[in-house]
Length: 617
Image (cartoon, rainbow, N blue to C red; front, side):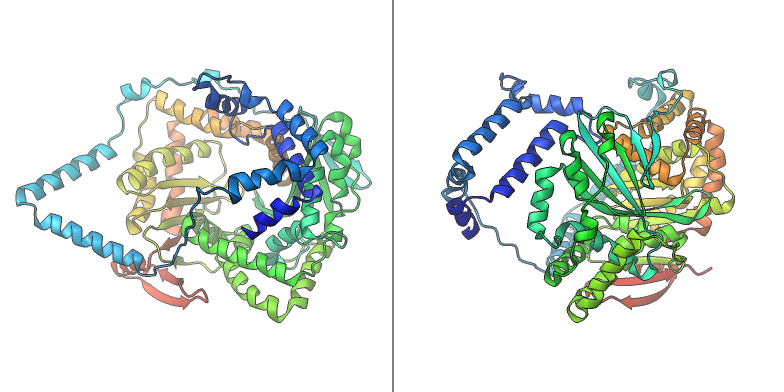
């Protein structure tokens, strides 16, 4: 409250107000709804007034209110505008509550014991006839859950036909050029006078041991400030002059190649009149500039005075905050997004690209952050020097470093305090000799929507069950989300091949599966997403001819393709690796049931133990 009182008395800084106003105005004018259709977004905004018999267009008319606010700030000053609001709605508002949360370590076990006691009392009060009726009702429910909907019911749902589907993929116009030795790709798309651009730096010259530091390096570029600006001033400058800048690593396998595609990508956007401001903030060598812009501003892509060159890695305490925040985020990710941790861990056992991703966002990254938190205090000069070394490697590419590492094979369970599990199993089907066919997109989606939905989610009780084929690496993976089971889910995964062998479907069901897949391939995209998708295809060497071929294969998918893929997917059953983020009780029970050997590794993070289990042949 003290900070709010100070703001009410002194007002906001002029630069902060200008940055906030520009950010809000840019957001309103751009109207970027991501993958959500703009039309639906506008409709939902209108409904907030419409349902109360008010003007449905009022929520969409931002121009006059925005100009009026700007004029008032210019005339009266920001303090006169905002200070009374802070006092009225926050400082002098009696309708507020303070909440204090405390950790109770034994709460989960205590609640489970109480629930178990209640259930035992209920069961003890039931007669034999009532117990038999409950068992019979449970069996009837399970049978209903596992019985597919009849064809006549499915046919009653309105749907497209294959004749409605375009035979060619969406084409994005691309023009390649060269400016001062920098490769430039341009898309002439309507962007409502907004410039979207990516600058791509090759990461392959970076030493292997520096890879885990890359995410923090990217964060530091925008949040540690330059030699002339504090991090607050830098962010205000970005807010005043642009629609936002982000920097992050990108890594992917490339089909047919052992070498990964690894880059750092700086993304930015600005109104056409602010293009020079955007590129004044970023530059460097060893890069590709990729832009999708109005044609008349293409000549403005001249990089000077960039963030990359001027950021100072000198603020030890701020960097330590980054490390602590990242560590806390990874610990939360283990509990809330364990399926992603499991997927990353499996990939790290199967290919180099997966190993790189795991170093920058998996269990290994968490272990790195735990050690780095201490190293920042003990050897800050060394940490700062490593950050500088990363920057130098991007500015002057010499040769690709030798990245040839994988995690050791074998099944793993990452044990955390949880009441639900995240169960994964994966294998590289390209290693079996499988050649990619577009039908695999249809088949994997169908498996997720039928077999895994029915067995893992509906019958098994998990929040989600799905599979995925990484067409670049060949890794086919099964995953479950918030799953009460472990071994039962693995049994479902192993039964997928048999499911495909025995599968029968009519033409209507097959057509819907194909159309659903095309819906993913042709997902709704705004101009920025179109350009970014095209950039990734360029980096990964995916040609328009290949896109056309895959589309034709998707549209011609047959039942025969499903049954043949059943043979391919047996590789996951026979040769797959398993990684589960699970509770200790479920892991112990799984090891006892399968008679597996356990090797314990106690983590520095005291509430987590990593078990490794190996199936005994």
